Image 1 (tube, rainbow, N blue to C red):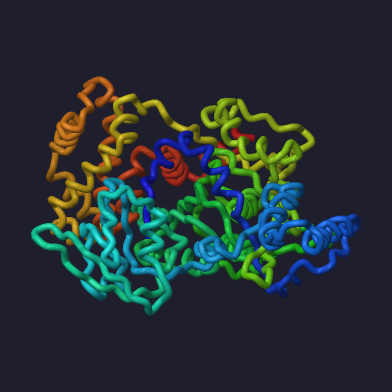
Image 2: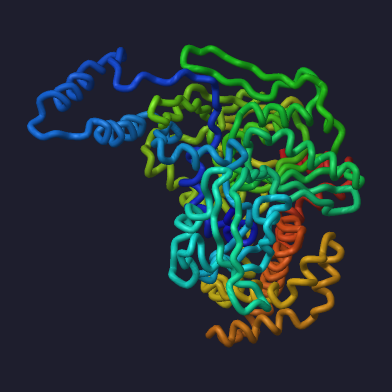
Length: 550
């Protein structure tokens, strides 16, 4: 399992363009659909010409051609004429495309990074295949099945392909370990590796829990409630649910989760299909979180099922939505398989929030304009100022409590929090852009590996860093040796970000994993800080803030 460097909390605008591409497949709805006959006679009006052409090519074209290849290339062009979220998934890509939604894959069970052109094991999944045979955090994977993968600039995808394989199969690793001269040979039997929806779940305050919720896969509702139960046992009475950059997933999971927060007979969402047939979903009154104080964090990467959840809560005046306007995906897909293992994810319905809002942003100007939407928001200053966002009166709707909300392109939060780039200096860009900061954290973690492996609570992690007041100075010297000269005024300005990132990446090397990562970043995360402020305000003051927002 590969973990990317996460700058989304600190440099949100840098990743805005890439979000649009990755998000297009979010929010599918799977149903038990029979396979579609392959190249059978089409019955749609105008399809006779297409069938005739395919038949002519197959039977009379002068050269022998692969009809399968022609079909594979033609289907995407047809779907492009529909909407941005109706897509074709070739058979070779199906397994990878479904992994995050299915919640598992077959592999060896390590969290690794390749930032230094070497596979560095950050952590080993407890009770996973690698932990059972002695792979340790800090190990470097030098060879895979006798092929050298370190220092040869092998692509991440190629490394993952070599590490993954059918459950029960074996892979031989050559491990470089601190204190051991020769490579350590370890053979791992691949097994089922879970992909979790919850990135982090910990107590961020005496009564406040914080959950980073990454996707709506098959087990999303169960995972979320398990995390809630753990935090409740630690005294949680308030919850900050972070669904920023959550691209969506299964519709039913969003409905089940919304149900936990709402009293009986509250609409959660309704869908409208081609013939006008509607399906309405209501809360059943059995939710276990109806009385918990709630804040939901969103941004431009929150899409599909994330928007269903945020819209259901907002329209029912349940909790406070905090952050920036969401992506704007209000279309529902169904995955329909073909006999060869490929599939089409076809838009079959539009969904609407309880107030009647469609939050689907326009796509009538074509895919290029649609995919550039987030960059256009950035260029029009929307990431930094709520005043730059304008909604037509025709898109005005009202929540159950009479508050004004708008449709037409995403969920506008109750509390807007601009992207904060104030302290991002050229020095910070250089040490992060050249990966110097991350390389420093790897070396630092190696030197303190034994101590880090013993840290099991966030207070212990804080105490560990408190014992090293010279951490920033050590990093500055390291960066200078790597060719980035100190710039005192810029360092002072970016000091909080630099230290937070160092602690986040080092903390991820402890058994706390991403709990440590997000804990280290929360102090410089303005959206989280706004949520904590909301949670600490008296009820009367919160009500006043809501009225002023109107």
